[in-house]
Image 1 (tube, rainbow, N blue to C red):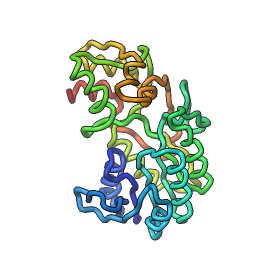
Image 2 (cartoon, rainbow, N blue to C red):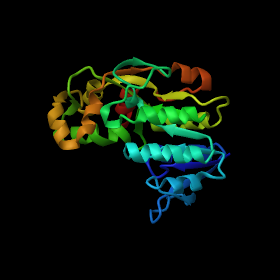
Image 3 (spheres, rainbow, N blue to C red):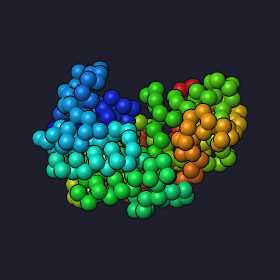
Image 4 (cartoon, one colour):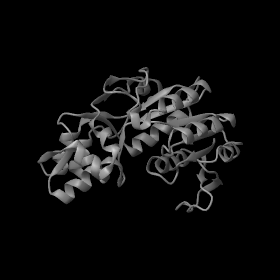
Length: 269
């Protein structure tokens, strides 16, 4: 298939573009006018997430569009969804587990998005109404990016002890970025009407992650202090979620190869 990937210079989008190319798809990347080229010289199509008309034009002629770009705010994101839908090309759209509330949820659970991303439930609704697919990834790790190589690992290195934000025992869904990319490739080949897919291999306690990063010791980073340093995104690390992906695995045959973040950390520290 001829596939356009939005966000191909990013962490998740780059992994998706590479995995789709390995699977034999003809992959192009959306490139912001004046932006940097891609390291692998992949075919590029100009378009701007802040210019809906450019997105419609960029998507035309492709068999699928994967949107793995960052959230840019309600007005921009929803206008972008509408523009891509208007192109008439099947869309695979990325939101995330934070679109769900605390507690247990699965692919059929209604959105209950965190206020930081309050509009993403509506974005999902519009994509699904147009027959597109929605992927809700857990927190991705691996290949030098994501949660582990970012905030938590950096704080552990600076402090000499692992840290978790807020109270102990908070659980969040996680997934290795290569397993997540494999899920997107499976979704690209899915038949039937669009639906929601969950991309997480497990739910893990963040204080246990912090303890491994800290060599066995972890302490709480009070939420107010974390907000002062990293902004309101710190609140996303305090959602206690258990997110199920059984329907996704059963329907697509998706089997993550890396099923323990803690073991992965011990092997790669």
